[in-house]
Image (cartoon, rainbow, N blue to C red; front, side):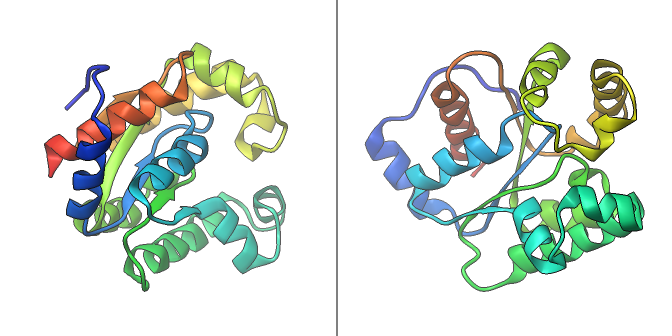
Length: 191
């Protein structure tokens, strides 16, 4: 389901918050805004926000870049899967979780999210992603060549997995509040 720009009223958001009985998990490409949208969404729903990448770094006592460099992507994805499982199954499951860009591509992680959470695919055009990820040099997968080419390839490879999320929201150059509104509307319609 792809959504339009109309928003919910404050009363509708409060009613929606009471209906949510599981985690809301944001999936999508790096740079799409999962963390910033997630923080705003959690505040509106009066639930905690958790960034899976931050949880991984805390558990490993290393940055994601260091994990990639020392152990490789496969090792990282396995740890990512375990951390996301803990966040979804752990106490206080009413929360918003931002995942890493590749998390939902892992079949086990994707199955867990689809079974026990509300999966929302945040999607952006490559131009938007390139502009956003260019702000920081902390993305290990982008250090292997031209970011535009890498993002274009990864987006094409990952879209079949992302498309399995029941809620699909486009995020562009406009205000984040517009994207948050679309996410809220999508969750409301899905529930």
